Length: 149
Image (cartoon, rainbow, N blue to C red; front, side, top):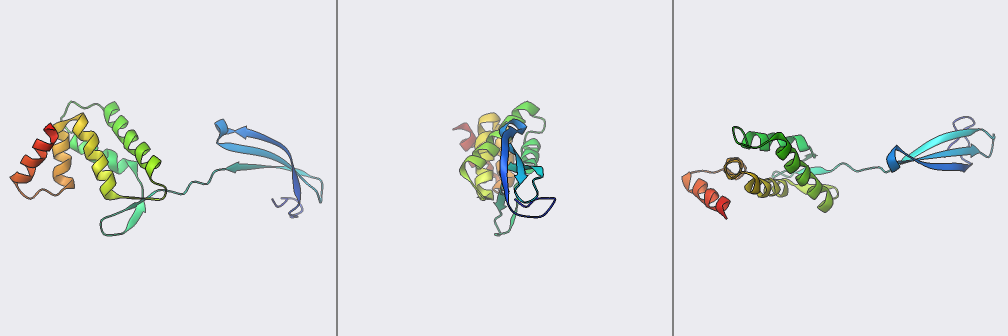
């Protein structure tokens, strides 16, 4: 670590403490060249999760997009905001557990449909109709039968 006073890269750690509920390490350092003390903070650098779209493009993961899709599917249905929050958090947790850097949109869509099927069958069919791009009534019938299983 470079000393902020004399700019020499030669110091020793005098004291280390956990800060911000364990998310940060606070270190008190002493420059061996000039003898002055200074504080540094160390935290884990998190690489942002990216979504790989159908066309191969990539964009940052945004749980609000998942929430928006679920809210639209659940319009005028007996689904509470707390239930939607729980579904979104569950999907986000599962994605973070299984994927490091990139997650395909297909995986996100399937997770949403899986959770909606358990939450509300009408919301499931609504979401599936947009996600799977239904072309005719046969697609709706198949989705409804899938929701019953």
